[in-house]
Amino acid sequence: MTARNISRFWEWGRKIICVGRNYADHAKELKNAIPTEPVLFLKPPSAYVKEGSPILVPLYTSSLHHEVELGVVIGKGGNAISQTSAMEHVAGYALCLDMTAREIQDECKSKGLPWTLAKAFNTSCPVSDFIPKERIPDPSNVKLWLKVNDQLKQSGSTSQMIFSIPYLISYISDFITLEEGDLIMTGTPKGVSAVQENDELQAGIEDIAIINFRVQRQER
Amino acid sequence: MTARNISRFWEWGRKIICVGRNYADHAKELKNAIPTEPVLFLKPPSAYVKEGSPILVPLYTSSLHHEVELGVVIGKGGNAISQTSAMEHVAGYALCLDMTAREIQDECKSKGLPWTLAKAFNTSCPVSDFIPKERIPDPSNVKLWLKVNDQLKQSGSTSQMIFSIPYLISYISDFITLEEGDLIMTGTPKGVSAVQENDELQAGIEDIAIINFRVQRQER
Ligand SMILES: [Mg+2]
Ligand SMILES: [Mg+2]
Ligand SMILES: [Mg+2]
Image (cartoon, each protein chain N blue to C red):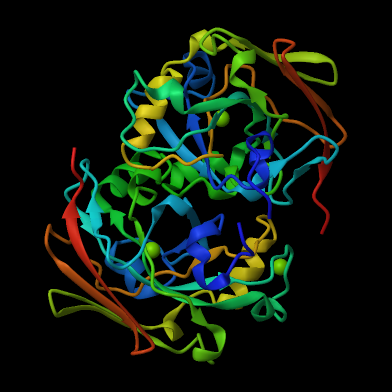
């Protein structure tokens, strides 16, 4: 194996930490309280999927939702990182979708169960190419958008985040060591909805990064 | 980087999939229903800790519980693996502890939140050396035990598992692709209890693998 290349972090990165309910308008649309501390969950790296491969609807769900999110790619690892030095640990960004089996998540929530079935399945993390840090000088003020079959579903600005990127890096690294190649998914603005077989998803961070994915049923 | 060596899977393996409530007597001691399908959650690889380093009690918990578990180390990856071929995907085993911030888990369960704070923190996965498959010819019938300060707390047999190792491998791989170096933690028998600073934990799979860890507070 040659040296790891951050521009292909999905091939070797070891964790994906997701932040839930980080946009107040999305927390509200799902009838969740506005969080007073970040809601964190994990996806395994096997959840990554790149353009050219489809997003698969797991056999056990009929309500697969899209959530467009800004992903933060860690360059320099660390723990107990301060907010003031947090951005030094960022190598760049990626446009990500947090695909969610919504009715399964609702069931997990009502039963007090972990969200694994709802969030961690294969292709639950479609991801763009790596975006070097320099291309997004102000990650706290970029627009995220997502269209299904050319119809705009989600449109929001990272300025609406409840917990900022430096806050999240500092908060997480107090108890989970961050490592090079890790991805932090920073939450989704409102407008999530269910996708269907053969839908075409297009999403972007303004016009800095645009991804296209087709939806297919998982085969038995 | 040289070729990956399965005997050091914790250095490069990319996921840890944990099974909750897989022993009926443990489900009962926590007043949980006996599951009809596996309860799965994830730890990140940053949770691994090896002998010689302490288990750290996160600052936010005062009820850190030990759970001794048989870990299954994946050799050959795959998805949609059948129960009959499942054991061909196993490279070996490890003795693992699923360290759990119990009161935080209780709070997550009651609020319908993911279990990340309770299960995914640094040092939440103490792990033994790799145990080649040949050393445990019948993993469905070995004794697991754990002592705190020389007092026996947990003692059970993997024969008490609700879902067998082949069943778990097949179930998981239907929606999460298994990869070489992945670890599946198969649940804990009854007897879990809180540990305190300076406690000495000793645990074993019979006398096939024995691990020793000391408990320390996380420092600010
Ligand atoms: Mg999300
Ligand atoms: Mg199967
Ligand atoms: Mg456990």
